[in-house]
Amino acid sequence: QVQLVESGGGLVQAGGSLRLSCAASGRTFSNYAMGWFRQAPGKEREFVAAISRYGVSTYYADFVKGRFIISRDNPKNTVYLQMNSLKPEDTAVYYCAASTYRDTRSVGSEYDYWGQGTQVTVSS
Image 1 (cartoon, one colour):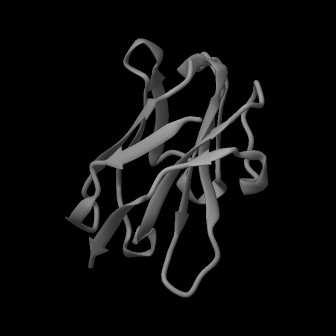
Image 2 (cartoon, one colour):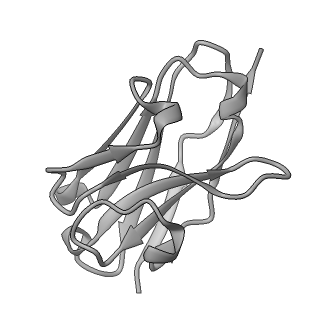
């Protein structure tokens, strides 16, 4: 089992920045590729970004390219999502997830463990 706990969400004005963190425990962190997903009210969960086990590869949804950066610190068992130039449409609950795949994955069903989520609200 892997336990994931997100933090860093909050209320920010459009154009601002937030840094989300996801702390993992329970298993060897570097055994898992990690991803961030989000779900806005009334919408389906969507992929945001992913990073491979050792951070060599990253992959982003088109709508966050150039604005968000995913990174990881394996000794700290933590994955991050730096979100810049935030827009009101980025408002959602953001979830981190862990996958036993080696490389980056963008499909939710390919992830094995999920956190509880952290709310991000961007005001206009």
